[in-house]
Structures are given as C-alpha cells and as structure tokens.
Image (cartoon, rainbow, N blue to C red; front, side, top):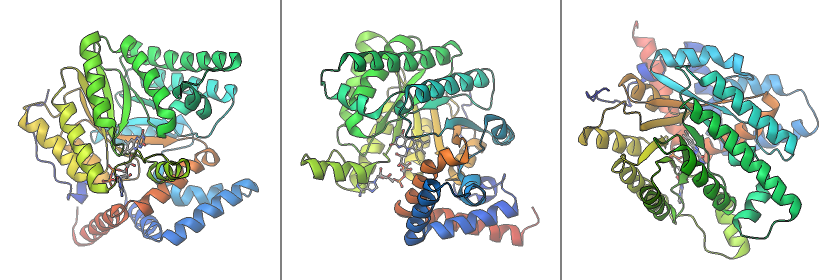
Length: 396
Ligand SMILES: Cc1cc2nc3c(=O)[nH]c(=O)nc-3n(C[C@H](O)[C@H](O)[C@H](O)COP(=O)(O)OP(=O)(O)OC[C@H]3O[C@@H](n4cnc5c(N)ncnc54)[C@H](O)[C@@H]3O)c2cc1C
C-alpha cells in the first residue's frame, strides 16, 4: 500500500504525453482542431454513415483519422503492445470490445464469448486488472425496457430473458473466479431499471467477500444519489459489497428529447452545475463508505478527480488502495490518467477495440462528444500545444 500521497499536477504535459511521439502529437493536434468545428463533425459523421451504408472503402481514412487516436486496435493481439506501454508508465487498461447495436441471439452469444476470452487474457495479466461490458451487448434493448416496465413477457421473451441472465452470470462468474472486477456500463434510463435489478442479483452472488461486480450510476440523473444510498442499505442489511462506477452520463440529449416527446419530467439535472454537484456528492458518499463500497471514477473532469484525490489523502487512504480506481477514455484526458499513474494512483484507460467498420458508431459518439462537451476540446488542444511548444524549446 502506498501511504505517501505524491502531488498530482495535471499541467505536467511531459508526463501526460510521454507515450506520444512528435508525429502522434501533431496528429492529435490536427484531430482536435477538426473536432472543434461542430459543422465539420456533423458532416464527417453523416459522411461515415452514408459511406458505410453504401459499402464504400472508407476504413483506411477512418483508421488514420479517428480510429488510431480513439481505439487501441482491431483485435486483441493488435492491442497488446499498447497495453504493455501503458502499464510501463503506471496506467492500466480496461479492454472495451466496442461493438454496438447488435440484435440477434448469435451476436449476443458471440459478445459473451469475447468477454470470456478477455477474462482469460486478463487473468494474471498486470496490464488489464478490470473487464467491462454493456448490458445491451448481451440482450435486446427492447427486452430490457419491457422487463423494467414490469410488462408481462411472452413465453418466448421469458426464454430470451433467461438466456440474457445466463450471459451476465457466466461472465460475472468467470471474472469472479479470477478475482477480476467487472464493470457494467449504464445506458438509457428507460432500459436501466431492468439492468440495475440484474446487476444487483450479480452483486448478491459475487460480491460477498469484496466488490467484484460494479454497476454504473449516471449522476446527471436526479435520482441517483438516492439510488446509491438505497443500494448501500441493501448491501449492509444483506451482507454484500457494492462496486460502483460513477459517471456523469452520456445520453443527455436523448433523455431530454424522449421525456419531452412522451410528456414526463426529464430525469436529468436541469443544469451542468446541478450535475456537477450531484457527482461530487456521490464521490464523497462512496469514498466515505469504502468499508462496503468500491469506486471506479469514470471522468475527464479535473475538479472531481482532484476531489477524490484530496479525499483519499485527507482520510489517509493509500493512493493505490485496491477499492479506488480512476478511468478515462483512450485518446482523451491523458493529462489526468498519466499524471495519476505517475503519482501512484490506480489509473486506467478504457481501451476500445474491434473491427474498424464495427466501431464506427462508437467513434461517431466520441467525435460528437468532443464537440458538444463544452471546454473538453479546448482543454485537449491547449495541453497538446503546450507540449509541442515545450518539446521545441527543450532537449528532453
Ligand atoms: C471511463 C469512463 C467510463 C464511462 N462509462 C459510461 C457509462 O457506462 N455510461 C454513460 O452513460 N457514460 C459513461 N461515460 C461517459 C460519461 O458519462 C460522460 O459523458 C463523460 O465522461 C463526460 O463527463 P465528465 O465527467 O468526463 O466531464 P464534464 O465535461 O465535466 O461533464 C460533461 C457531462 O456533464 C453533463 N452535462 C453537460 N451539460 C449539462 C447540462 N446542461 N445539464 C445537466 N448535465 C449536463 C453530461 O453528463 C455531460 O456528459 C464514461 C466515461 C468514462 C471516462
């Protein structure tokens, strides 16, 4: 355990970009400059979708622009050199098989098999101490919705639901046999009730000794602080541990649009400030209940990350305590991940991988997010430019 808390300086661009050569850094500069133009991103996304539909040969273009920056490879083998490099500088990897929008039982089984393969790969591999999946990788979105609404399922759907539960269980079981934490992503609120209930079942079974199964709470949702305290009470009463990934939430526009369309109150905080307040309260809440809870903090927000770092320090909790993890997406906020890793915190990167054509929806969301998250692109650009300038004037 590392009881010493080394200072974390997010302004240190030399550490932040230590794995990027000049060419890669200049490409990142070009990429984020392009992403700062919303019109260009809208056009780029529309073009990618059109080209995909007409089977145009766009993969080489996607590869040299967005793919190489935001994804670590097309196959697990491609990713290995990247994982090793990150590990050498104290940053661990969470391999994220980023295939989305699948709808058939065969595809869901295939996703489960990929996860099982990732679990065997990760067992005893110091580079990859955590695995992750999305609920809808293992079953139909609409089935989660129907189940969550309490609508009676047909006989066929009951069988389908059992298969879905079986996929969750086989992955959680295999991960727990290797003592690997497994993160389960959160998605749209109208499918999330059923996912929450299912993850709770998994926690009851696999988190008896320690938190290995992690649900995700999106703090842009008004009701999530309440959800966290109810979950903790259940865990205390029933004797299991809570693994929780805290994020702000990625589906804000969709959530608000649906609430407006169906005429129910939006489940999302009214302002960014309210989301920030909720998020930071959740960070404090989980960190003050580490006897029962473990935290994976998924954020690019420097203030929230600093809050967690300061709380650990003030509570005399080791920087590398196995119950507290930090995570950013590959290709974003390297100044947070690499500076945390260098200071001895449990820093990780979500590492998306998969065939280029299949990860296009993921890439499209990354491009849009970097345009719409105010300040994010500007922050990335200013740090990249600072480092380019530093390299020009220094001999390091
Ligand atoms: C490792 C990792 C894992 C993730 N996993 C998930 C996941 O499982 N599910 C998921 O949904 N997302 C996930 N995300 C994405 C995450 O939810 C955020 O969309 C993203 O990280 C940006 O939020 P932030 O805390 O990094 O930064 P910030 O830039 O501080 O916050 C931006 C976020 O604030 C919120 N926000 C912005 N404007 C407003 C407004 N006007 N009113 C209310 N709220 C507002 C939105 O959530 C927006 O995404 C993950 C992110 C990371 C880094």
